Length: 413
Image 1: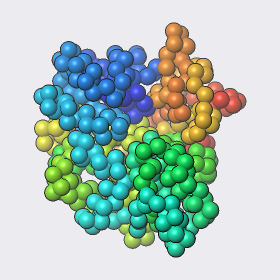
Image 2: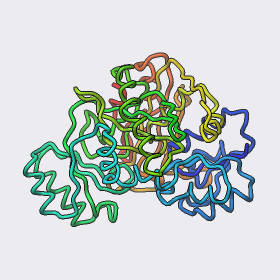
Image 3: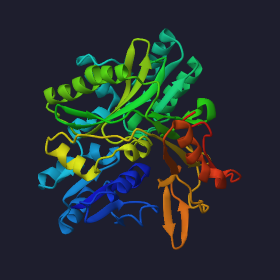
């Protein structure tokens, strides 16, 4: 097969790495890709939002399968456009992707189909939003309705912090159009975990659970980010928890999407909180998670290309998993998730058991430089979680005394 991967981040690099293991892949392209992918795939300078450019390329190169990584092209309708042209694509339509594209839609959908989630209200008016916060108290969660690259969520510990978040989103337009509507919801107590699943209409094939570390700094301090690291599987998530999530979250969601005329094909991601009364949905994504993909795909025994083809064809991919652990640690640019510099030289990393997954990188001649907030992920597989933690941190010593970079030291611990 000739395969095209759409995207430029760490998630897409992990997808590329997994596809490289397949004996079925003839040519592997990524659009636009990043500095770390150039040795494993042919990077083509087509922006992920250039739908027509991607279609023209797919036709020119006789692409047999396209896999979409990021959320923005999905919500623009890249799957719809490819399907109209008779091109095979592993991705949900924009109608199905609205489950991630609008938190307001997702909450209304969960209410309608009795999917467990936090108590919530939606607002466009600042005063009404503040009155609701005054009524409910803190801690409380404020979310931008639209896509904000994983950063449109504020977990406010005080009412003053919640008021400030409302002002930032509705008045100062921190997240532009994504924040013209906000969702305010109860703060759920418990431990977070993520569960991704391959989906074809009403058929659901769950992956192994992962846990993502969202806060920027150690001990879950600092602002929310797109994710500072992850590990899989999650020892405190039991088979009972997974069974409950399948029965009360994943299956009702895909059934509800069919009922709404939005049948789903691709990867459905449920971000969950394990509460005293069972797992509840924090958010849905309609694609592989980032950085969860970097720790889940290394544990997949199957050929990823074959899995995607099977799912598109409505066949059971018969997933098999390594009985091991994987830990991924993100190295980010100082200042992330706020202002940060680009174009900083990335030091050479020593050879270790860890795989280096590139995210915000760019190759300029012989130099590898930063080109984003999250720069790379050091991901390691081992027999135990503790071993995987140790292997993942091994190559990161080169960043220790560099003020331009930072990483959390407690991922997987």
